[in-house]
Amino acid sequence: MKNKLLPILGSLLLMSLGVMLYYSSTPYMNLYVAPMVKSLGFEPTRLVLAVMLGLIAFTGALIAGFFSVFLFEMVSGGYRPLFMGVLYATPIVVIHLSLVIMGYVNGANMPLDVLWLYLGEVVAIYLGFLLTARAGQGVARRFFMPEAPAS
Image 1: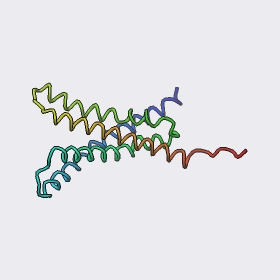
Image 2: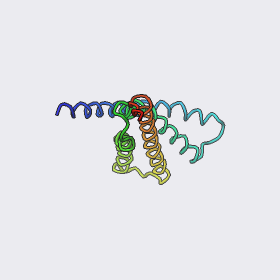
Image 3: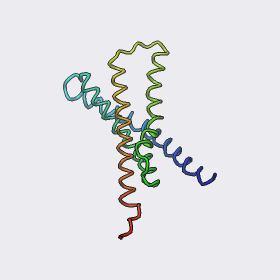
Image 4: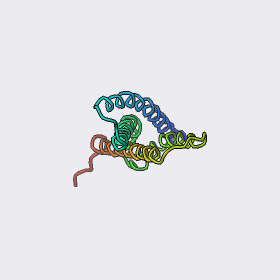
């Protein structure tokens, strides 16, 4: 029992670290990128806004994914990167989408464009975590796996 409890506790610790890193990095990026886009001299269109928010979510997911799912996959041997990438990204996506649901519960009338922006950020979050999980698998297999004996 003790042998199985330690990886689960380590995984939960790394998952909570990833959630904290994502939600501590993306607001600062929003604070610096939004004024930069306005200083370019044109009013940002919906496409520019969608790309900007998607890239911020992707960058935040890469930062959080490196310190959570990358380290887990690197230490565990990289046997299940796709499952672990989705598992580690799901709490962030649930928190992200719960904000949208709370807006609807409180009576906010969000246009359809805003929902597409949120869904684009969700895709960027999953993509960032999946890429870092695959990178963790590659590092584990490259540096930490024993080589097969020569026959």
